[in-house]
Image 1 (cartoon, rainbow, N blue to C red):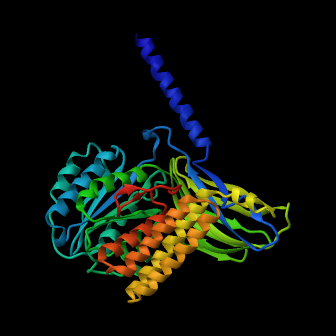
Image 2 (spheres, rainbow, N blue to C red; image 1 turned 135 degrees about the vertical axis):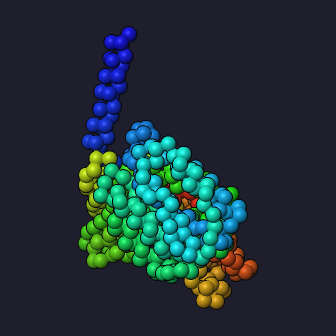
Image 3 (spheres, rainbow, N blue to C red; image 1 turned 180 degrees about the vertical axis):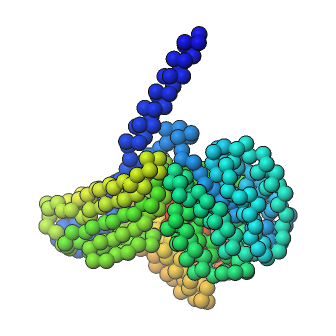
Length: 457
């Protein structure tokens, strides 16, 4: 019996070694390049949507994930009194329960000042951490910037260990009113943190928090953003967020798209990126196992003869494989044919790429509509939304793409909201958060607290 036990242990060890070796040799991400059509109309100037997709390799088992270095930063200002602080504590405790003993956790709370209640440490069994969380009581003002900065300081204690995924989860129900407090201030902080490998996810509770500030911080740092109108949603939000954090397989992903002569890149759609000459560059940041993350570039194609085939775009992606702790470089090439047969062009449509393009274009227009409404130009905002809805509807109908038509109809309904009713605080937060979720390809939309469809991620 003893020999059988020893043999079983040896076989299990060999299987684990083989699985680890396979994981180390296979890239953590796979690269695809897709076009909105594989056949374009001949002899006219055309526009193409180039979609660069990074598919994170699904982890073989939960324990194969990388360890997490997590800082929870909780607003305990006076407005968090009552149910909100209790729900926030329960959500934080649930987050701890999802971590492993060797994960690292720190807990920072802030009101008028920021205080570290739990310095960065291994989670262990988590019992003493739970007791500390339950002891949190509400206090004074809202030093949000200081809270995030202090959370980052705790993460930096282990930042040199490249095995860890570094993340801050920030929860607030109010305005930042102590220290730097503008969206630009927090955006710059987010951009600085992601350069260190730290992403910040923001959770706004109720109708009093500053959605501009929270979404800017999250987007600039490659984190997620959530709007929870009710604090009862917090546990589900934390569970969804930890699902992402525990599933990061690569980080620092940068996409470079080179276009040949005769094809001119026009714009990066739905993300911050640069277009210079024949080249577009976009940062995608972290890649999650079992999920797709993508960049969209709109390009103009010069007239091409029928029957010809030509290169549309050449892609190079660099990122860091966290498990293997090595740099990865991937390349791909996109080509298309040209035809004078319009039915062939329509039949070649990639409906998913078109739907992703429509979603991101609509999100861009909603951002502009918010700016117009803030300036008192509500009628102009509604007109812009309606014009874009009409364009997207035509686009969807031309290619028999029902998903795009449905998005256009929703965009038209947004125009009704802006034109026919007061643009409430709740509506503004929903618009801002939903557009941020689309840009970040976040699968958990906090405004409705439900997962979204489409190939996003």
